[in-house]
Image 1: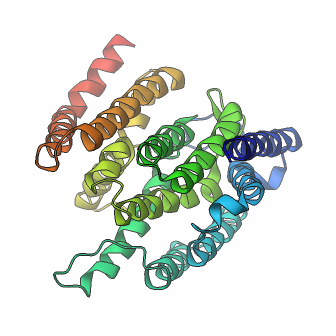
Image 2: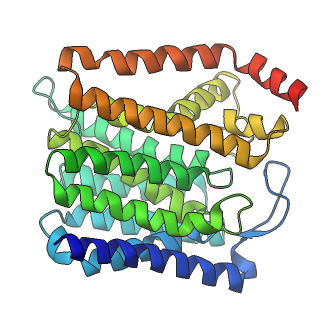
Length: 335
């Protein structure tokens, strides 16, 4: 089985790498992301990276179907396809935010009410499916919001799903671990072409489905009692904290939150004069620290002590948020 899994990972990596390379080479005019005043890039770049990633995942899954068949959730598959196709159309020709949101609601309804993937406790049972829908919808969109810098979204996928894979294998959940590792392999194939300076972007077809996977797999692992809910929150916190705080600030200012902008902390760091590589490197260190602390907290601390980990990260992010303007000003001075 180990050899079979290794072959599937290699196939996922090679297919993702190869399809991404072909897209870069062809450079189809209709799928190019043209730079504008809100962009961090200055030349047209293809935004079909999602095609490469999900081609790799699809071929890898097919190669190891016997391992994954017990894990197969037809509702999750259908939801992923809906999100992917709508996002692909949006990458080609912008569709209205209302149409995108409707498609996303349809997709998450499939997995929540069909596949029963949601957070649930015995108290007030009727509320939990709706909370699950909100979590998944926010996951889809926050990942899309954060996909604005070379290598950023791909690195979060590699580190985040890699951490979940490690947690699963430490608890002998091989099929769950295998699928998370499959996402890592396909993301690495894409990342070879997306690392600064990027020659391809993930696009909505990559980022929205990846955000959906982040939410769905995080909840699925909690339902299997692989970890507490705080674990994926800490692991993926470099994304959701920035996205959530930026959204709240824009809502307070009365801005159109569905429009593209350059107000995320990582964007401000690049605009302050730091290179994509330096900002990405700093974030990768943060991602690794979050992941290692979450794994250690889950595996080696008692449940009543494990809350120390998310509490420490909460304090850290609050300090960063309160001093973000001073940090950006300092970066501008140094740069």
